[in-house]
Image 1 (cartoon, rainbow, N blue to C red):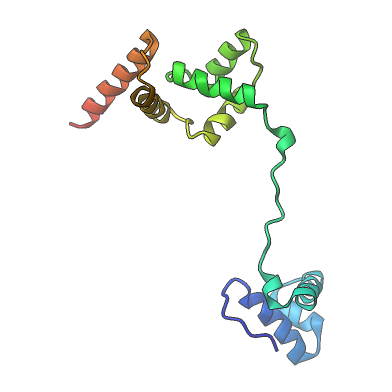
Image 2 (image 1 turned 45 degrees about the vertical axis):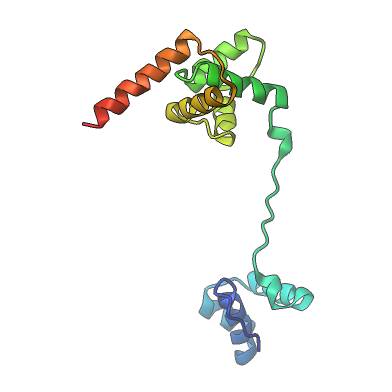
Length: 157
């Protein structure tokens, strides 16, 4: 008889206990709505590592082959701060002109990893960089910041 207070594995332990009580794996699986294959997988986990082995282990590991190289990632982040008003498609097209080949969805993925996925977050990152490094803003950056300032004052009323 298996005992646990962990709500995540209580159902799994309950299945194993029910099968033991009934003496019939098929009947226990049918009552719990679980396949026999799943039952035997649970049983094997308990036999090998005890009841704590029933806690799900994440099997997913990141596929780093799908990642772009660091230079491309850095170029996309730099571009996002230089032109915060540009979207992912335009960023991809402009970077391609500079010799950095990355798709629009690739740009989006990089932005998500660096918390730059929308206009406001890119502006916030730009403001943080200006405060930290004291850089001089380009005309497009100033325009983007002014545009956001207009939206903020309008939404305040």
